[in-house]
Image 1 (cartoon, rainbow, N blue to C red):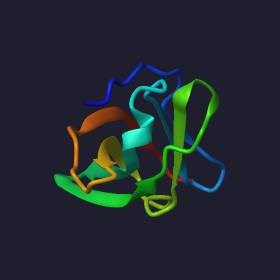
Image 2 (image 1 turned 180 degrees about the vertical axis):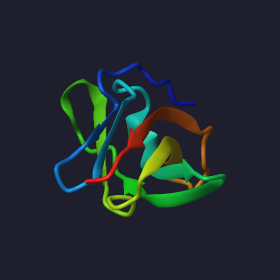
Image 3 (image 1 turned 45 degrees about the vertical axis):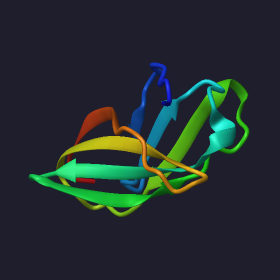
Length: 103
């Protein structure tokens, strides 16, 4: 299983309304992970917004830019789940919540 580490400012809103999602797994078992699914939960509905590959990064930080909810106004909760090279999805991890206003 993947061990997540806390990270400073896991969610941030860009000037165009897109949201930068950041999480950290250190370098724990990254060789067995193919990608992470990134999901957004809002208004009672969870939507997969994309996938992020755990490319080599210093310290294990992984980033994903969500453009699907760039015009959305309200609260969004983001979560990620690892998918192994064998196609098995691991346990979901909540990255954080953010409240967006009008741009």
